[in-house]
Length: 385
Ligand SMILES: Cc1ncc(C[n+]2csc(CCOP(=O)(O)OP(=O)(O)O)c2C)c(N)n1
Ligand SMILES: [Mg+2]
Image 1 (tube, protein in one colour):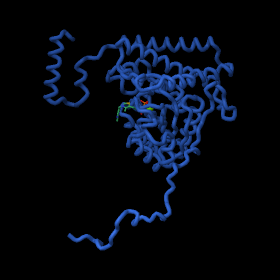
Image 2: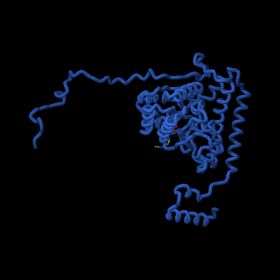
Image 3: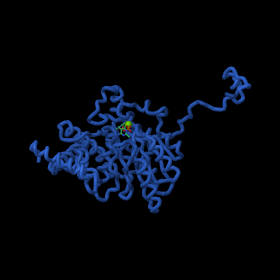
Image 4: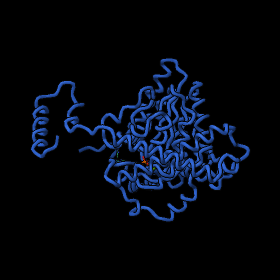
């Protein structure tokens, strides 16, 4: 066998690459320090006067109530799940500023594409709590958004809704509408290829999309440090050529201001923005999870002191808009709303077992028809109507 250039003898790699060859690559990590970090309200409820927005008192109280309602719904759902009256559920305790702030500036014409931990925002967008209960309990009629609400049903397949959200944005451009889309996804979902594709499409086509990367520290039991070698996820925006910012996700004012600016830019044709919201999942990943086996209590304690609702209540109290009586009243009213929703949900007709066969085919294949009949026969045998 002839070997090309076999007479050119090399004995070791040192002879091929001279030790004196100057390095052409700077391997020190790129300084991400210039990515803007935004906090307006610190964990003590103290406001940065230079950045304080001028939302009306009514608006601030409306937002506060939305955050408290999100938590009341969350707590009620948890109780129902533990009583065996609700399906698996993904709590959002601790992330109320992040979820309410990201949709606060949306109009009815704008679109919202949520992942599964987004019910606080869905309630703000017009979903009733009993509708969401029906959804989480597994009824197929719980999934379609209410009439006139421009939301996608939430996505459980992580990151899968981000490309469709960009598609909706590109559709708005095509129809020459001045609306925008907000889409959220987690730190775990940020590793999905489809999320990178979505960021790229949006940036190249200047689609009117606001990406909210909810960095809550964990993807079930995987900490962000094992998810990515670059924990500043806002950098994904910079990498794709779009404006990006890292926001204190437990600061409702920062979340509202950053999203407002990004949605306005999107509506004005200036393209997408990526907002990384740094927050923390205080509770379980889902009701099927036990975080005590993978998470340190000290970490949870540290984030307790950064509670988004407490922080906002402190700010509103200092502004003279709340006092302890009003805080109690708001909480009681929200709990009552959640209980009313629970009762309405319990009063709804139960699902019919055969419905699980009903929504797969326009005309049912005969094999499936046979399975359906067999299933119903067995149910009758067991006395189930
Ligand atoms: C494509 C896909 N892979 C795996 C899962 C299983 N799964 C459900 S939630 C989750 C973690 C998601 O973490 P993150 O994106 O950070 O969102 P978080 O739950 O923290 O809000 C995983 C891996 C899934 N739902 N979809
Ligand atoms: Mg996460």
